[in-house]
Amino acid sequence: MGIDKQSDIAANIQIGPTDLGMVRIYIEAEGGIELPLDFDPEEAEEIAEELRAAAEAARQIAEDGGRGKPKRR
Image (tube, rainbow, N blue to C red; front, side, top):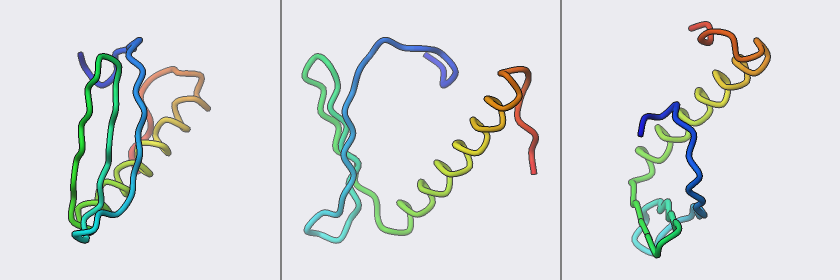
């Protein structure tokens, strides 16, 4: 499955600090899948920046009516 493919899989996500000073992204999906992902704070900030950039790109695509790729800045 690629990043642009639609999926019917449902999952829950939780994000928070651990007692060891890491940032945990915890994903729980159908079928009993539990995926704890731990990142140091710097990695978590990089992920946050990537999420913001993806949100902006998705916003541009939506504003364009889904025609074509977003403009790169």
